[in-house]
Length: 140
Image (cartoon, helix red, strand yellow):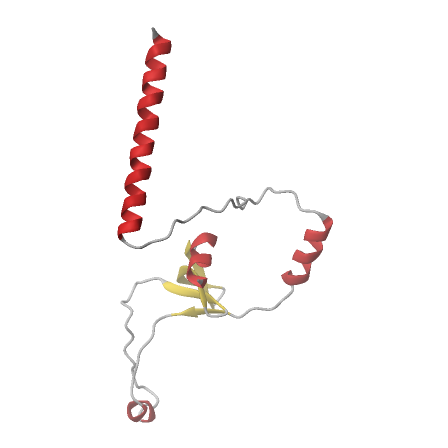
């Protein structure tokens, strides 16, 4: 008896999948879209074994210098107002006090953080690191 139930539920699922596929196809044709195929990609993992060749390639780029900067905020002003700035002038930024700073590497946002003081020097504590997938999406 359970075998018949399994076959019925399997048939119902096949019918459901077929109906969903038909609906997607009709919506795509109505919008003039072409069919899209999914690409099979390897999952990025940290625990993957690396070959000596891959390790050599990775070592080659690890010593490349990059510029890291922390952005408090931005503002747009005219050249006239820029030339009038002097010591003691205040430039208003679009960012609200207490908002996290942007951490940029070569101009690309990679994290947010907050200002800290360590041994009388400013530093930044990272509060939110942008995921690798999100950084890759922003490159497109």
